[in-house]
Image (cartoon, rainbow, N blue to C red; front, side, top):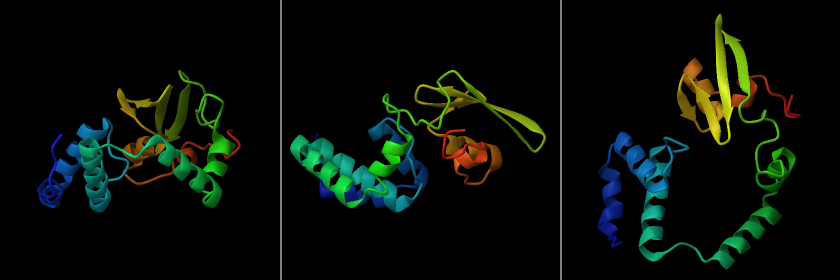
Length: 152
């Protein structure tokens, strides 16, 4: 893939919706943030990565080691505390389970999938997205659905 500086500069002229579509095209998933600056940077990095290759495996391993050593709060402690041997968040019920909640008099049912959640026929990446669709506001999905840090 040939990429030029102009391709990256052109990202600034895209609308927010166009940036979101471009992100989904390049990463195969919906963006985790709708922040314009975040999308521009992630897309630019991905375009460069596709053109000249990503980081070598040994460098990625070294970076992971540095994160583990110097940012344990945001990295390892969370992963170790909430990850099961399969890599799934231990606070969540098994795939196939239903999470139910009554919100404003309406019964909400969310099906837990292997990787994501299904609500009203639409699949979402995490519970926070589902909570936002239901309420219209940003919510921590675990808090909205009443999950405690110990998984209950």
